[in-house]
Image 1: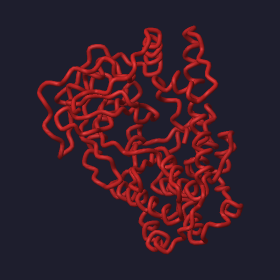
Image 2 (image 1 turned 120 degrees about the vertical axis):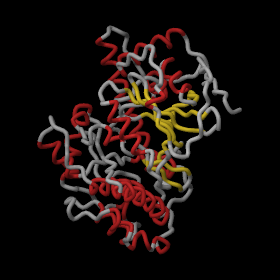
Image 3 (image 1 turned 90 degrees about the vertical axis):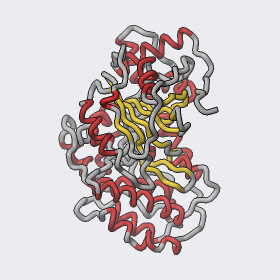
Image 4 (image 1 turned 180 degrees about the horizontal axis):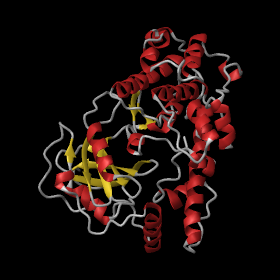
Length: 412
């Protein structure tokens, strides 16, 4: 089956026109006549030699890449398949494969309308050398006039979705997962990289094997965090540390520059809290209220959800969720903590968080979908196009997710 793209059901002409129109407005790309440049094609040290001629793309592939973008992937030796693996704040990630080896990869197209292409290329070349069990390998990097592409190992499903499907999940299981996250984060910190975006959807699992995705993406975006859009779109930023929340509350017109390596530790603490009880440590539908609670580290370990959690887990979690970043432990400190080193002594009693996690995941998907609807309707209204109307998440996905990239950036 190698070298054959999976075919999706053909779209109607009306749907194709709508997809094309929305892509132009959402991505603002002018990708006509662009091709990948051999001079700007970087390879992972272990990447195979690519073929001289690329296969022609399958025109029925159901993805929002333009014909030129699909051809650019083929010139680099890859075939794009129709399955969307994930979508982040500034690109789409599709499954694909290497034409010669058949290696399954995640293919990302990063539009360079808002970002310095040369900086993106340089940063990605630096990421090529990262080698850690939690880091999906980047195999190739190439560019066109308007975009940068790269091929990376596929990283599994989102951690909360994986855990919600386990029949039994224990404190010991949480330690197994969090230890891998901390080891990966420590590897990044040693190499001078602060992840800055450790939300649950960027931690992915294949069974109990953890992968950290979106590494270096915030560095690519000028090394600063902008949470102004979180307040404007009212999408709760549950993973940000108190020092960043305070910056945003003081001046919402500026980006926060307070995110250090200790901010990553806070974000891992948020993930651990959610794994242990099924809910985030702080919550509000209003982003400003949530930022205020985060800035004061107002979380609770005394309610009924925590009655069966061991004191060892609570103590470790409190250290990670310390308001003052100077007093917060480093990744090395966390890894050497007894909670990690003596994880076999942790309780193996099932936590029964599956239903709570499932409800939380559904709420988050609903918020992301509504954000997409609002963004597309705004574009449609400006262009006098009939608005999207959907009452179910499935309908929202059918109508919107194929062509909106940026408006679910903050959803967790």
